[in-house]
Length: 125
Image 1 (tube, one colour):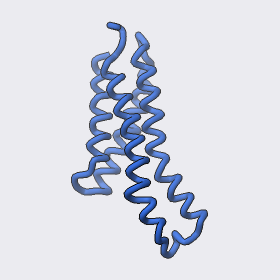
Image 2 (image 1 turned 45 degrees about the vertical axis):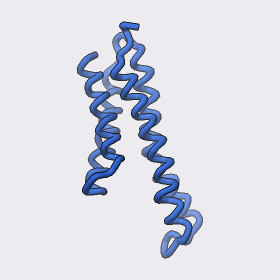
Image 3 (image 1 turned 180 degrees about the vertical axis):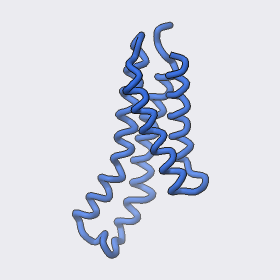
């Protein structure tokens, strides 16, 4: 048990949670309401699918990164490049979310949590 990086377990779990929350909340609070009464360019079915799929991609990527980080928690010497890549994915989402919302939003808080836990795991590793 001492060889397990608990920070990676926490970061990976938080990443999976962030991805799930992003997809669920985005669908119920943004995508479905917007597409319920499409106007202009969103009247096309193909465009609606593109919008929905593009919205889901970040959440899927964050969850995949979470699974990878959890797998790294059980490695004695995990390769750092994938961990830095995951950190860059979380942090780019964080900064994009901060810029888009310009105020309090659960998304940037969760991505900050993901990034902080992962960075702590890298530094502690």
